[in-house]
Length: 336
Ligand code: TXA
Ligand code: MG
Image (tube, rainbow, N blue to C red; front, side):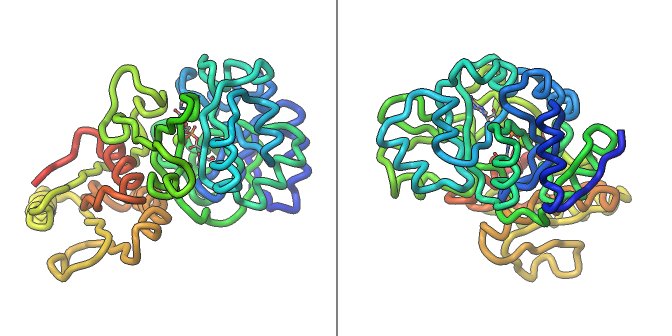
């Protein structure tokens, strides 16, 4: 199959493709998604095939307004309305009981679905033209870092999907915050994102963070996606945390270099300790870090054997960054 990269002027062609039961990759403000009509189970299966994704890992359903969200889910109350009125369109996914019109292929066999209304104008226009809610995971091969540019999608999925809508670089760079809204009066963050616990607490009371967010989760977890290997590029990733991280990073770097390995250090705020070493300093604040982290992970492929990330403070957006870095590093997390 030939994979074409098109621009938003060709959204109509892509929407027609969705209506024929096929998949199309499209930009959102977080990462690129691989979409299909959430009503068509045969189309949904094509998403799992193209990605090589385990079928019990549920998909997020993207809607173009709140009415469309209510057509596919139950359990709405004034608190949930307040949340979505405040954060939609935007990177917030609410998990609610699903209606029968959404097949179990979308929810990975669960009775609930994640729903969000993306902020990207291209995404909204695409969903409207499709005339159906669009279920979409990130548009990468399973286990790989999520794509923040059309070319990332192309390199991962060429030959497997017909169209990619190019909307430029995504503005947030990390996937949406997923919040379980199925327990009356209680909101649980299943996956952290750019909308933080503190942001949610501005609008509703009683927000907690699922324990799985903090670890490399195994076995049964609230958000099935959390149990799989994720975000891994084709080189080694180390994550170094703790008070003595800088010294540890330098000694690891020297060891790798002695072994003849091409090594890079990735830090947020710079300090001159790393002068003369191969080091990427993201700089700016943690939002800038989150915007660039997948891009850096992907674009170092073919250039290095190992990347050493210095951990960032685990609060605010830092929680989402560390959640992804831990999972990209897998076993290679060093406390020093
Ligand atoms: O920003 C995003 O959310 C991007 C863009 C494309 O919208 N999408 C995305 O999808 O990240 P994906 O499939 O890569 O991640 C979906 C996450 C998984 O961790 C999954 O477990 C969780 O959402 N999820 C989806 N439905 C769920 C449900 N019913 N219950 C619990 N977790 C759910
Ligand atoms: Mg993903």
